[in-house]
Image 1 (cartoon, one colour):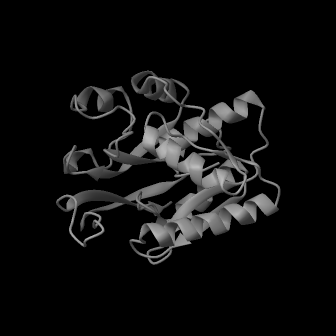
Image 2: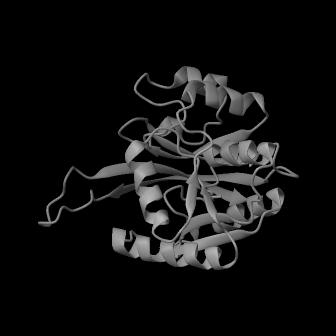
Length: 231
Protein backbone atom coordinates (compact mmCIF):
# COMPACT_ATOMS: atom_id res chain seq x y z
CA UNK A 1 0.00 0.00 0.00
CA UNK A 2 1.48 3.30 -1.12
CA UNK A 3 0.89 5.29 2.05
CA UNK A 4 1.20 9.09 2.27
CA UNK A 5 -0.43 9.43 5.67
CA UNK A 6 -3.21 11.51 4.13
CA UNK A 7 -6.92 11.02 3.58
CA UNK A 8 -6.88 9.42 0.11
CA UNK A 9 -4.43 6.68 1.06
CA UNK A 10 -6.31 6.09 4.33
CA UNK A 11 -9.69 5.73 2.61
CA UNK A 12 -8.09 3.58 -0.08
CA UNK A 13 -6.61 1.23 2.51
CA UNK A 14 -9.95 1.06 4.33
CA UNK A 15 -11.72 0.00 1.11
CA UNK A 16 -9.05 -2.57 0.24
CA UNK A 17 -9.24 -4.13 3.70
CA UNK A 18 -13.04 -4.24 3.48
CA UNK A 19 -12.88 -6.38 0.32
CA UNK A 20 -10.62 -8.99 1.90
CA UNK A 21 -9.10 -9.52 -1.54
CA UNK A 22 -5.55 -8.54 -0.61
CA UNK A 23 -3.21 -9.33 2.25
CA UNK A 24 -1.63 -5.91 2.73
CA UNK A 25 1.92 -6.68 3.84
CA UNK A 26 3.51 -3.22 3.92
CA UNK A 27 2.82 0.49 4.01
CA UNK A 28 5.28 2.12 1.61
CA UNK A 29 6.12 5.79 2.18
CA UNK A 30 8.61 8.18 0.59
CA UNK A 31 10.53 10.09 3.24
CA UNK A 32 12.78 13.13 2.97
CA UNK A 33 15.79 11.67 4.78
CA UNK A 34 17.36 15.12 5.28
CA UNK A 35 14.44 16.49 7.30
CA UNK A 36 13.06 13.15 8.51
CA UNK A 37 9.60 13.92 7.18
CA UNK A 38 7.09 12.46 4.72
CA UNK A 39 7.96 13.76 1.24
CA UNK A 40 5.74 16.63 0.08
CA UNK A 41 3.46 16.42 3.12
CA UNK A 42 6.16 17.53 5.55
CA UNK A 43 4.86 15.33 8.40
CA UNK A 44 7.41 14.14 10.94
CA UNK A 45 8.55 10.51 10.72
CA UNK A 46 7.48 9.88 14.32
CA UNK A 47 3.85 10.57 13.39
CA UNK A 48 4.11 8.31 10.33
CA UNK A 49 5.42 5.52 12.56
CA UNK A 50 2.54 6.13 14.98
CA UNK A 51 0.06 5.70 12.12
CA UNK A 52 1.62 2.39 11.04
CA UNK A 53 1.54 1.11 14.62
CA UNK A 54 -2.13 2.12 14.97
CA UNK A 55 -2.96 0.27 11.73
CA UNK A 56 -0.88 -2.78 12.56
CA UNK A 57 0.82 -3.08 9.16
CA UNK A 58 4.63 -2.87 8.88
CA UNK A 59 6.05 0.40 7.55
CA UNK A 60 8.67 0.47 4.78
CA UNK A 61 10.24 3.77 3.73
CA UNK A 62 11.96 5.04 0.61
CA UNK A 63 14.71 7.34 1.86
CA UNK A 64 15.10 10.31 -0.50
CA UNK A 65 17.54 13.24 -0.61
CA UNK A 66 16.38 16.86 -0.54
CA UNK A 67 14.52 17.63 -3.81
CA UNK A 68 15.65 14.53 -5.75
CA UNK A 69 15.53 14.58 -9.54
CA UNK A 70 13.43 11.98 -11.35
CA UNK A 71 16.37 9.61 -11.86
CA UNK A 72 17.23 9.55 -8.15
CA UNK A 73 13.58 9.12 -7.22
CA UNK A 74 12.98 6.28 -9.68
CA UNK A 75 16.15 4.45 -8.66
CA UNK A 76 15.23 4.61 -4.98
CA UNK A 77 11.65 3.59 -5.70
CA UNK A 78 12.52 0.63 -7.88
CA UNK A 79 15.16 -0.63 -5.46
CA UNK A 80 12.54 -0.73 -2.72
CA UNK A 81 9.88 -2.27 -4.99
CA UNK A 82 12.28 -5.04 -5.99
CA UNK A 83 13.02 -5.63 -2.32
CA UNK A 84 9.31 -5.96 -1.55
CA UNK A 85 8.79 -8.22 -4.55
CA UNK A 86 11.54 -10.52 -3.30
CA UNK A 87 9.66 -10.66 0.02
CA UNK A 88 6.52 -11.82 -1.80
CA UNK A 89 4.62 -8.67 -2.81
CA UNK A 90 2.89 -8.85 -6.18
CA UNK A 91 0.55 -5.84 -6.27
CA UNK A 92 0.95 -2.13 -5.56
CA UNK A 93 -2.10 -0.26 -4.24
CA UNK A 94 -2.55 3.45 -4.98
CA UNK A 95 -5.06 6.04 -3.81
CA UNK A 96 -5.04 8.02 -7.08
CA UNK A 97 -8.46 9.14 -8.28
CA UNK A 98 -8.34 10.70 -11.74
CA UNK A 99 -4.82 11.72 -12.85
CA UNK A 100 -4.46 9.65 -16.02
CA UNK A 101 -0.78 10.47 -16.67
CA UNK A 102 0.21 9.54 -13.13
CA UNK A 103 -1.63 6.22 -13.31
CA UNK A 104 -0.02 5.40 -16.66
CA UNK A 105 3.43 6.26 -15.26
CA UNK A 106 2.95 4.03 -12.22
CA UNK A 107 1.66 1.12 -14.27
CA UNK A 108 4.45 1.32 -16.85
CA UNK A 109 7.26 1.56 -14.29
CA UNK A 110 5.98 -1.27 -12.12
CA UNK A 111 5.19 -3.50 -15.08
CA UNK A 112 8.93 -3.48 -15.81
CA UNK A 113 9.52 -5.44 -12.60
CA UNK A 114 6.41 -7.61 -12.74
CA UNK A 115 4.27 -5.74 -10.22
CA UNK A 116 0.57 -5.16 -10.91
CA UNK A 117 -1.20 -1.97 -9.84
CA UNK A 118 -4.67 -1.47 -8.42
CA UNK A 119 -6.52 1.82 -7.85
CA UNK A 120 -9.55 1.31 -5.55
CA UNK A 121 -10.68 4.95 -5.71
CA UNK A 122 -10.27 5.36 -9.46
CA UNK A 123 -12.83 7.60 -11.19
CA UNK A 124 -14.95 7.94 -8.07
CA UNK A 125 -16.64 11.32 -7.53
CA UNK A 126 -14.27 13.27 -5.27
CA UNK A 127 -17.03 15.20 -3.53
CA UNK A 128 -18.79 11.96 -2.65
CA UNK A 129 -15.51 10.39 -1.56
CA UNK A 130 -14.64 13.12 0.92
CA UNK A 131 -18.18 13.07 2.31
CA UNK A 132 -17.87 9.29 2.77
CA UNK A 133 -14.50 9.86 4.44
CA UNK A 134 -16.10 12.19 6.99
CA UNK A 135 -19.17 9.99 7.51
CA UNK A 136 -17.02 6.91 8.25
CA UNK A 137 -15.35 8.74 11.13
CA UNK A 138 -11.99 9.59 9.58
CA UNK A 139 -10.41 12.74 10.93
CA UNK A 140 -7.70 14.56 9.02
CA UNK A 141 -5.90 17.90 9.28
CA UNK A 142 -4.38 19.95 6.45
CA UNK A 143 -0.59 19.97 6.76
CA UNK A 144 0.32 21.49 3.39
CA UNK A 145 -1.44 23.92 1.05
CA UNK A 146 -0.38 25.13 -2.38
CA UNK A 147 -0.50 28.94 -2.44
CA UNK A 148 -1.63 28.77 -6.06
CA UNK A 149 -5.00 27.45 -4.89
CA UNK A 150 -5.42 28.19 -1.17
CA UNK A 151 -4.27 30.81 1.29
CA UNK A 152 -2.42 30.32 4.56
CA UNK A 153 -5.65 30.21 6.61
CA UNK A 154 -6.41 26.70 5.35
CA UNK A 155 -3.30 25.28 7.04
CA UNK A 156 -4.38 23.40 10.13
CA UNK A 157 -8.02 23.10 9.09
CA UNK A 158 -9.73 19.80 9.86
CA UNK A 159 -11.50 18.22 6.91
CA UNK A 160 -15.20 18.52 7.76
CA UNK A 161 -18.36 19.96 6.21
CA UNK A 162 -17.31 23.50 7.16
CA UNK A 163 -14.00 23.00 5.36
CA UNK A 164 -15.76 21.71 2.24
CA UNK A 165 -18.11 24.70 2.24
CA UNK A 166 -15.16 27.11 2.36
CA UNK A 167 -13.21 25.58 -0.54
CA UNK A 168 -12.99 27.74 -3.69
CA UNK A 169 -14.77 26.31 -6.72
CA UNK A 170 -11.50 25.64 -8.55
CA UNK A 171 -10.17 23.37 -5.76
CA UNK A 172 -10.89 19.65 -5.92
CA UNK A 173 -12.56 18.43 -2.67
CA UNK A 174 -9.91 15.71 -2.36
CA UNK A 175 -7.02 17.95 -3.41
CA UNK A 176 -6.34 15.57 -6.30
CA UNK A 177 -4.54 18.28 -8.29
CA UNK A 178 -2.07 18.90 -5.47
CA UNK A 179 -4.01 21.77 -3.90
CA UNK A 180 -3.48 20.44 -0.39
CA UNK A 181 -2.22 17.48 1.61
CA UNK A 182 -3.44 16.12 4.92
CA UNK A 183 -2.56 13.95 7.90
CA UNK A 184 -5.08 11.41 9.20
CA UNK A 185 -5.10 11.27 13.01
CA UNK A 186 -8.21 9.16 13.63
CA UNK A 187 -9.73 6.41 11.49
CA UNK A 188 -11.75 3.17 11.51
CA UNK A 189 -8.52 1.39 10.50
CA UNK A 190 -6.61 2.76 13.54
CA UNK A 191 -6.70 0.97 16.89
CA UNK A 192 -6.29 4.36 18.59
CA UNK A 193 -6.13 8.06 17.61
CA UNK A 194 -2.73 9.62 16.84
CA UNK A 195 -1.91 12.28 19.47
CA UNK A 196 -0.23 15.46 18.27
CA UNK A 197 0.16 19.12 19.13
CA UNK A 198 0.09 21.99 16.68
CA UNK A 199 3.35 23.68 15.79
CA UNK A 200 4.09 26.64 13.54
CA UNK A 201 3.20 27.36 9.92
CA UNK A 202 6.24 27.43 7.63
CA UNK A 203 6.35 28.86 4.10
CA UNK A 204 8.64 27.30 1.50
CA UNK A 205 9.15 28.22 -2.12
CA UNK A 206 10.40 25.72 -4.67
CA UNK A 207 11.92 26.21 -8.10
CA UNK A 208 9.88 24.76 -10.93
CA UNK A 209 11.35 21.65 -12.61
CA UNK A 210 13.92 22.37 -15.33
CA UNK A 211 13.46 21.46 -18.97
CA UNK A 212 16.14 19.60 -20.94
CA UNK A 213 17.79 22.89 -21.96
CA UNK A 214 18.05 24.02 -18.35
CA UNK A 215 15.17 26.50 -18.37
CA UNK A 216 12.23 26.46 -15.97
CA UNK A 217 9.00 25.26 -17.53
CA UNK A 218 7.01 27.45 -15.14
CA UNK A 219 7.45 30.01 -12.41
CA UNK A 220 8.47 28.97 -8.90
CA UNK A 221 5.72 27.96 -6.50
CA UNK A 222 5.17 28.10 -2.77
CA UNK A 223 3.58 25.98 -0.07
CA UNK A 224 2.47 26.58 3.50
CA UNK A 225 3.32 23.69 5.84
CA UNK A 226 1.62 23.20 9.19
CA UNK A 227 4.06 21.47 11.51
CA UNK A 228 2.60 18.79 13.75
CA UNK A 229 4.48 17.70 16.87
CA UNK A 230 4.10 14.27 18.40
CA UNK A 231 1.69 14.13 21.32
